[in-house]
Image 1 (cartoon, one colour):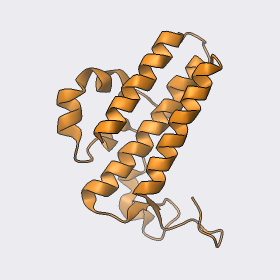
Image 2 (spheres, one colour; image 1 turned 45 degrees about the vertical axis):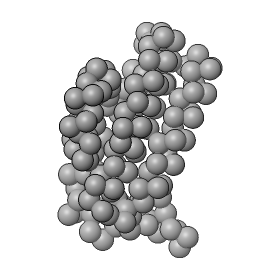
Image 3 (cartoon, one colour; image 1 turned 45 degrees about the horizontal axis):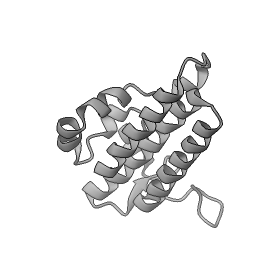
Length: 141
């Protein structure tokens, strides 16, 4: 995300992350309708990642999540990850792990490298299930 000056904004707000998460889930529904099931599995992980980062902001009382391009980026390097397991620790991990354990177990292995896997093996039912799982977790965050 960039500021109006064209430079990267110092932070990405929790609200911006929520909007990104909502947008990616809308994209997932469009991909589902188009029969692009592998793409649903891939893009849904980014929807969850954005929701987790919004949760980190909320838990820590931050105005926003530090941007990679910001002056203080080096201080927050561990947060610049796509590892959902690491990002889960946003203050709701106890609830997610106890009440949504099967959903979490299903999605926690997501990784950006899925973009290279075009094996067309995901079924519509699996893609629908993934959307449902991600939505349940997003609501809990």
